[in-house]
Length: 93
Image (cartoon, rainbow, N blue to C red):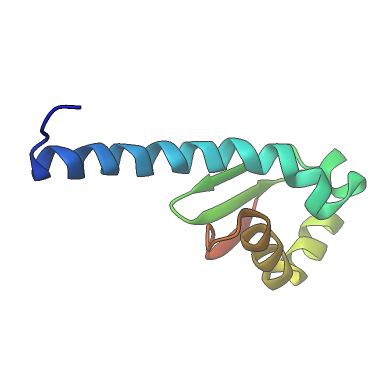
């Protein structure tokens, strides 16, 4: 393995961190049913992690209300599933 300048190494690490964020966004879709159950997953149209915020899209009004009440639990479940603090906030749309 050749020599790498420190600045180049930091750029590579920054790129890996960005890649890791993209992987987390894809993984949340895969584990959403396990975390929240089949019913919630069935009526959730889209789940995204953008800048440490979990965006949950659903057209079902009562589900939106229920998810709003569960925000702290959702944050805890997601972060526990990933083994690190991935999200800080949940936004229901």
